[in-house]
Amino acid sequence: MKKVVLYLRVSTKGQAEDGYSLDFQKEKLLAYCKAMDYAVVGIYSDNGYTGSNLKRPGIQRIIEESGTGKFEAVLVYKLDRLSRSQKHTMYMLEDVFIPNDIAFISLSESFDTGSQWGIAMVGILSVFSQLERANIKERTFDGRKGRAKEGSWHGGGTHPIGYDYIEGNLVINK
Image (cartoon, rainbow, N blue to C red; front, side, top):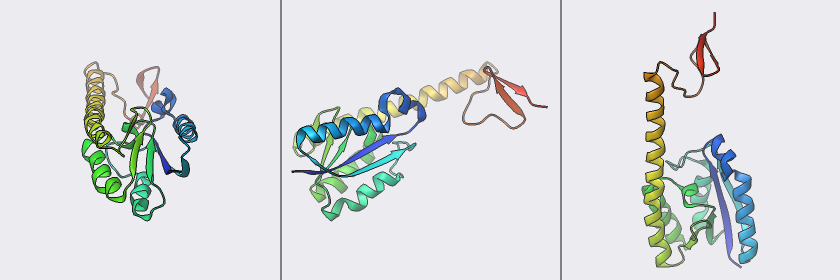
């Protein structure tokens, strides 16, 4: 029986609401493990962390525990849950997983790095994860820029001090 750890991640509240919630990922991964007769020996999650870097407590625990023999595979719902950076994905594969004989399995993309084809597929698909991250960043910037040109508040966290945000407009709070 293969010992696996599950890795779950969402970066935003919207992502959690759009079907990638931690509970959704966990449910799908546990069902897969049951079907494959895998023993789940750990569940690591990062709620509210971007996939653009590795500064996440859950992924750091996986890195730290990779050489201990605790698990033989890391299972994610989708490749971009591991990382949205090709560099970081390849680091995890080539410097963390492969040297420690740990397979990386993505449920959605149906690959397993236990084979050379699986490793190649991760490399190819990580390019698209990185591209999607860049597109999201660009669309967000363009949207904020457009709102600023219209004289509207461009968003971004909390509204400015001295204003209330009412029905899409900033209103002076006397």
